[in-house]
Length: 225
Image (cartoon, rainbow, N blue to C red; front, side, top):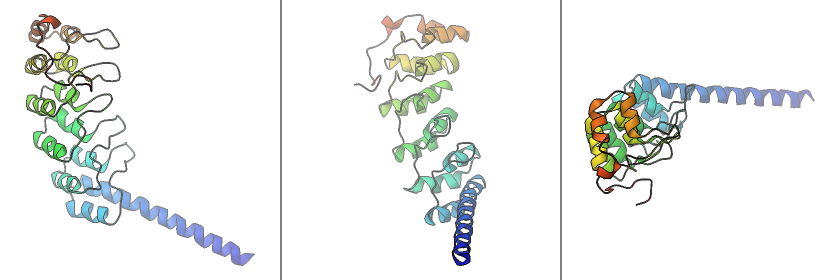
């Protein structure tokens, strides 16, 4: 009986040790990502550490590296086929969405080269680019068939975000590309309502011309072309 008890105790201890060691290596990955230590990240991935696991805040190592920023770690991770470039954080924000929001054109290009998803349910990279009026990124996403009338969980479109928070250039770009000005979100607000709420005269003027003044759609609108 004692023999079997001792064996069980050893097995439990070995399992606990293995779990602790695994947790430590995961922590090492996030430490290396924060410190912009590319060799450390590469070594850990090669040793079998899952680069797509999330930390206690729901962030992947790639998103952590983008936040710091840690550009050398970002390049190492994007070069690894094991890294899921579409792995989102706890708010369903992908690396491409965050790069689009911050206007990081070079990083957007690298993510798109890795076939990062342009279209997804809910908030999209185009929403995020439109929010801060990053025209070149918006054009690139549209050229790669971003859904111009994509709707967030509450029905908000990129045009609404551009009207309320972005720039008049972003509003004009989306209108010229055929965005639907008459769409309403779950609160019954159109893009014009967003502009009025933000007291943005230039956007109000553009949007007051009405949906009838918009050009015929040039882009996929809701996933159907």
